[in-house]
Image 1 (tube, one colour):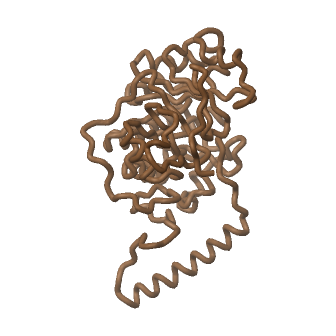
Image 2 (cartoon, helix red, strand yellow):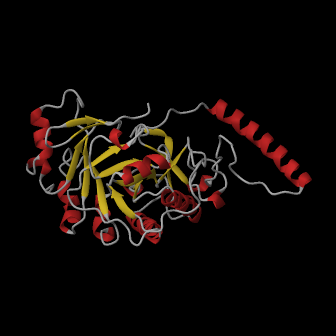
Image 3 (cartoon, helix red, strand yellow):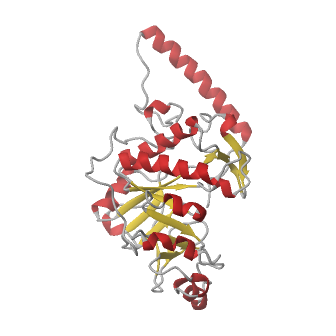
Length: 334
C-alpha cells in the first residue's frame, strides 16, 4: 500500500536536535514557574512521544475528545455489506452530499482522516473502519522514537520505511493499545490492523503463527472493551484460531492467487469478507473479462460466494469499481 514519502535522515536529525533544545528550554521554564507542562494548546506538532496521552503516535489528534462514544455494543458487520477503502489520501467531505459512493462501510486511514469526516459518514448512516499498521514500525509516525530497537526486525519487502515488530513485546503492545484507544476516541466503529502476518515473511524476529494469534486476541480484547469491531487482514493460516473473536476479514488478492476458499470460513460464520483485487491496468484497462473473473465464484474465485468485492488500484486512492460494473471516484485531499 502506498506510503508517505520518506524524509531524509539529515533533515530528521536536524528536527530531532531542534526538538530536544526546545524541550530543554520549556522544561527549564516550567520548573522556574512551578507549573506542569501540558500538551496541545495551539501546537502544530502532537509529538507522539507521550504514551500516557494514548494518542497512538498519530499525526493529528487535535480536537479529538478524551473519551470515545459510550456504545451499548460493538457493531456487527453483515455478509455482503457494500464498502469503499481509501488509504492513499484523506477523504474530502464538505457535506453529506459529497459521500460517493453510497455504500454501507468506509475503510479509512485512522490518522489521515479527521474526526469530522468520520462523524459525517456516521451521520449519513455509514460505518467507519479505521486502518492502522499493527505489526510494523513506520519511520514517518510521530512515535517512531518510542519503539525499543530490540523490538524492531527486518524491513518489510518493498517498504524500506517499515520494519516488522515483536508483537509479543509489552512495549509494542502499549503503543498498539494507544492506537486502538485513539480509534475509539475518534469514534471508529471498527479497526483494520495491518501487517499481522509477520510470521509468514522474513521478519528477523523469529515471529510465529502463535505470536500472531495471541496478538490478535490482545487487540480484539482491547477493541471489544471499547465496543469496536475488529478485522483480520489477510493471514489466512490463522483463521481457524481467531475466527471466534474476529468480526470480519479484509482479504487482498484472494482471487488473483486462488485463495478465496481459505477466507470462506468467515461467510460460513455469518461474518463478511471485504475483498480487494488489484488487476493490472486499473482503472482504465480493466477488461470485462478480467472483472468478470474477479466477480465470479468459479475458477480462481472459487469459494468467494458472499464476498464484498471491490476492484481498486494498488495505491488505494478514491477510484473503485464494483461487480455491477459501476465505477466511482471518491473526492480526496491530494
